[in-house]
Each structure stands twice: as structure tokens, then as C-alpha cells.
Amino acid sequence: MGAGRMMHDWRLDWAFPLLARVPSLWPWQMASVVGREPATDRRHLLQWLQGRFAAVFPQAGVHEHAQWARAHLEMLAREMLDAMAFHRLGVRGGPVIALSGVEHARTVQARGKGFILVLNHFDRLLTAPVALARQGVPTNVLTMPVLDNPELGAAQRRFLLRKIAGYTAVTGGCWHSTSDGLRPVVESLRAGQGWVILADAWRPEFGRLRAHSFLGGRLNLPTGIERLARTCGAPLLHAATYSDGPSRLRVVVEPLAPEPELAIDAVISRLEHDVKERPWAWWHWGMWDQMWQSSTGEGSCD
Image (cartoon, rainbow, N blue to C red; front, side, top):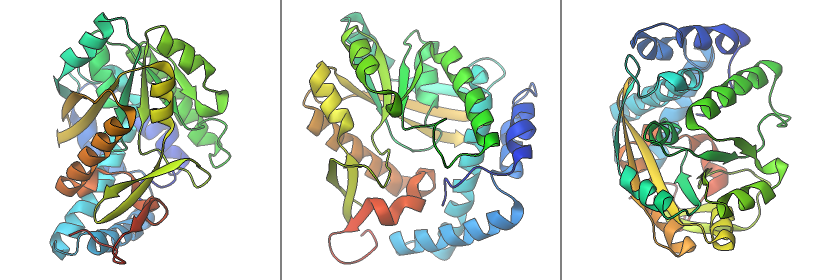
């Protein structure tokens, strides 16, 4: 529900694309005013999110729950603007990106090894591969079905086509969907290219799930990254983005263990830490009931 469906056509077809062309940082302030959804839907979402945060983080107060709900919708709206303005991220006149850990990607790159850059649906997630591309580390991205997703409307497809074109132009790679098969990904990894894959991608039809300790229960996630890394002998890196303001972003790149299962365990452990610190920044609160299971019979974290 937090990530939700994209909103009415005017936001997708011209509001965010036009904002992305305004030559200042003002659009990133305005993005939350435009929002992803109509005002009535936004009020309902805020109420729903406050209830979700109250259930998962009962130790926090009502004021914090309300603040997190607002911050969640603001973050998602700014991500919509980012999607139309990848060319402006990390360059003069655009949002500032402070990148640390690029040396880990360069080390793998220098060895001629293909690698998987593991992300989660946390904060403005695609900032990380953009930041790496600015430093000469191109990547491809593997996602769940996008354009052939029957849940998408015509305006959403138009928006996503523009997003994909802008993203690949900046990152220097391709955008590949799981519905197109994994052979090109395997061949590309073996040829030394980098791929961005999200560890917490989730759909109801997913099989081969593995449970991870998460916020007092178990988060069930697919094992595709682990299997792909093992098949290709590809090392894993992790990257996370942290918003320090509408137009100030930090990206941290970290190396991971050579054992894929241990590497993904570390990624989800980091996600748990980050979600505790910034509950508003995780995209998947709307899927909580499907992804998460209590190990104590209670729906909250200690």
C-alpha cells in the first residue's frame, strides 16, 4: 500500500517529467506536494501507514508514527521525480550524492569479474547504480516483469518506458526483466559485467523462498541471487542509499562474503538495522502481511 499503484495520468504524463526539467533543486521540494496519489487517497494512506507503524513499532509514539507516514510518502514521491531525472543525479545543479565504498566495485572490476550489486527497496534505491556509473562503474539491472505486467495501465507503461530509457542512458547498461529469461544475465556475468538485483523483490507466486530473521519474526525472500551468484561464480556487493534531505543523498557500497547465502544474510541484517533506524524508508510495508511471519505470535518488533 505504501508503494501502491501509481496515480492519475497527469502526474505521470506531465507533472513529474516537467518538474524534472526545472533547472534548480526546487523540484525535489515540490515532488512531495505533487505526490504519487490524489489528496483523498493520500489521507487514507497516511492513516493506514500510521496503523502499520503502530503495530510493528509499538514502542514509538503516535507523533513518530505520523511523522514516518508522511516521510514515507514524501520519499516515494521524490523517487518518482528521480525516475524522470536520473541525468541530474550527482551532477552540478542536481541532487548531491556522497558515495563511499566505490573502491570495492573498482577492485572487482579490475579483476575482470562480473558482479552482482545487491540492493533493497529502501529509500531512493536506484541512486546507488547512478552514483557508481558517475565513477566509471556501469551496471545492468534485473527486475521483475515491468512492461508485461498486467497490473499496469497505459500511463504507467509510458512512465516506465521513460524511466528505463533515462536510467540505462546514465548507468551504461541494459534493463532486463525476469520474464525475458536469465540466459543473457548469466552470459553477461561470466563475461565480466555488473548486474543490479534487489534482494527483497517479492511476488505472491514466488517459490524457493528462504526465511531471514527480521523485526521479531521471519522475512521470506527469494533465493534467486544466491543461486545466480553460485552458478556464475560472481562476487556480491551491497549498496544502500540514505536521504539526508530532498536533494542530499548518501550511498554506501560494501563488500560481502564469498558464500552467497552468508552474503544475503548480511544484506537482510543490514536492511533490518536500516529499517529500525528509518522505518519510513522501506517500500514494502504494504506487503508486510505476505512477506513477514511472526516467530512469537506477535506482530511487532522488540
